[in-house]
Amino acid sequence: MTRMATLAPVLVVVALCAFAPATVAGQEAEQATQQTEAQLLRLIANQPASIVAHLDLAKLYVEQGRLEEAYELLARGLALVSEARQGQADPTGPQEPVRIGGDIEAPKKLKDVRPAYPQEAQDAGVQGMVIIEAIIDRQGAVREAQVIRSVPMLDDAAVDSVLEWEYTPTILGGQPVEVIMTVTVNFTLRR
Image (tube, rainbow, N blue to C red):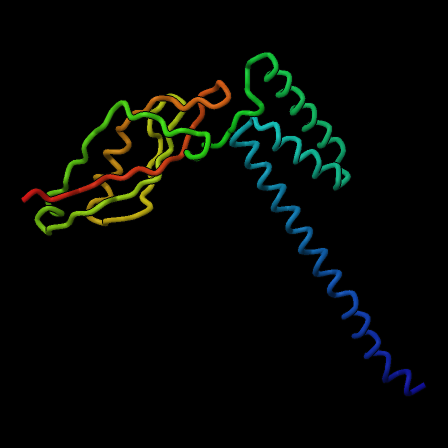
């Protein structure tokens, strides 16, 4: 009996250790599911016409046994498909900007605005190339410009210039789409 009494705590520890990996794995899976749900909800909030996001979230809810919520999402997804068939939306068209390359040709620049060379950069003899990742909207306007290769004294002037550029709209599948492309702004001192 005393031997059993001394083994009892050891058996409890062994049993806990045996279940611990399963518990940790279950917690990690639950966290991953929660993160996926949060991402899909954000995507639906930002892009209400995203049929794929509605269907993916409905599938997740079915797996969790949340059938009423899944049914509601499926109904919204089917309504989006119906609207798309009537020409009100394009379910296959990208909702996110697409990157230039492959079959997607770069739009043609219609309006070029030269950057204002900052006087302090000229006085310091700073020159170089600023590389910017630009998002061009469906109408051809630059809606966002982010520096990806910096020349610190020239970055602001480069971004200000690029935000005024205009392009031809990019057409994909018969519909205008937003595109992401890399552009360069060169600053050269004249001597």
